[in-house]
Length: 144
Image (cartoon, rainbow, N blue to C red; front, side, top):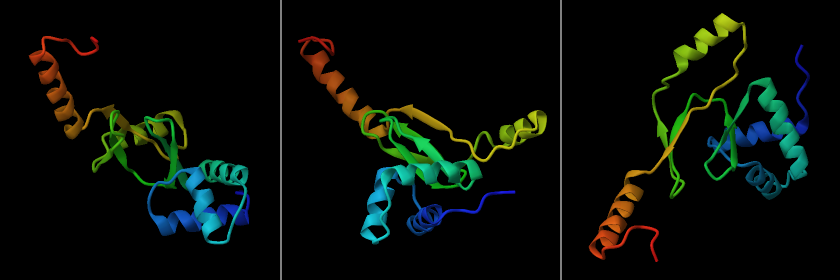
């Protein structure tokens, strides 16, 4: 039997439904204060943890180490290590694996995350341009 949700958990769920995007715990805290529904930051984190364990909220960690929370969704990303831009991937390449793992190991999976890290097209072009300039000067990147 699942425990009944707290008012704090319900407020966070309502906010996540309204925003319909991933958001950090700190920004959830700020948004709730703006709506005159303030709660302590520690309460925000505890509520998010409980909602994750219930399987209604998921967390993804960016390359910067920041954690973003959202309602469950089967969404994956390409994340640029240079500019931090995240590009959603429309298809889920591991959905069948998730089902297989649940069946084979009798393990209830609430969600999974899949993140690829590298350089976006714009940052690749900037890097290539910098390499051309260094090469034209007869220098290698990193030399001073």
